[in-house]
Every structure is written in structure tokens, then in C-alpha cells.
Length: 146
Image (cartoon, rainbow, N blue to C red):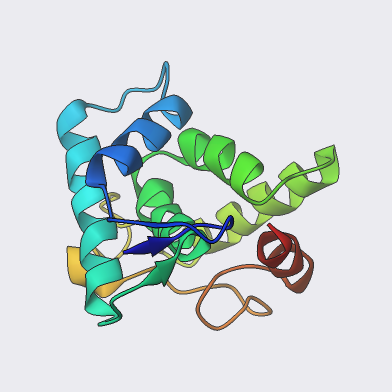
């Protein structure tokens, strides 16, 4: 079950993941099969937590890593809405973080970095990021406030 911000709970729905990510991937070279695999990775990550109910913001966090691996532009689109980017500086910080992570070899789909399987979770975070959610403290506060 997914607990929404309004307090309503609903069953986890993989199709909702695909629909949400499709918007971020609009006009990008991402296939339906790749979206289905991403949704499966997200579902696997959520189910592996072993909790019967997960907050909706944790579902969003579980999307970020696989989407980053799939397409950086789609990731930025999704992250900008999900994390509530408010300025150009927010985009610049996120892009700088993507570049640092790429330099460290986080990309699962590139030949120059380690490959991640569906059960590996999110790639390593650069120094200063939160231990499990990948959000800066200010971003975490914005996400928690939603």
C-alpha cells in the first residue's frame, strides 16, 4: 500500500509509475520496454523494504536512481518537479551533482562504469548527500513538507 500526502492509502500501482515517468521522458529516446523495466526496479525496491505501507514520497525517491540511469534529461525533468526546483541554481546544483557522479562511475548503462542490477538500489552518492534518499537537507525539507 502507498500512503499519500492526503492520508489516503491505495494499492501500489506500477502503471502509475510508468505514466509519471513517461511525461518526464517525452521526446527522449526511451522505449516502453525501458519504462517497464524501470517500473519493475522501483517496485522491487519498494517491496524489498518489507513494509506493508510506504509513503508516496519514498516511491518518488525510488524512481530517481533508475531514472537517472536511464536518461539524465528525463531525470532532471522529474527531479525538478519532484524536488520542487525553484531557481536556475537548483538545476545547476543538480547538473553538477550528475557530473560528479558520472566522473565517479555511477552510470549503470555506460560501459565506463559499474553496472547495477535491479536489486542494487540507488548508485553511490557524492559526499554530503543524505545516507539513503539522495536529497540535500533543504531538498529533504521540501519533500517532507509535501
